[in-house]
Length: 30
Image (cartoon, rainbow, N blue to C red):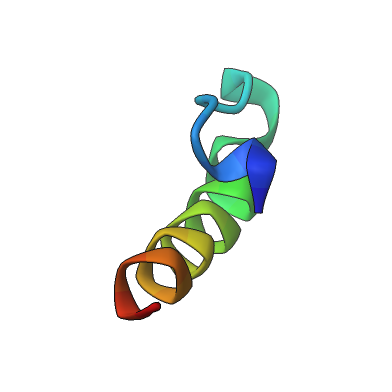
């Protein structure tokens, strides 16, 4: 995901954190 490159706000640090990690893994896997 494009948002994976940008760090999410502290408000959604937990939710976006896990999602961000998933995006990073998908990109790295590709």
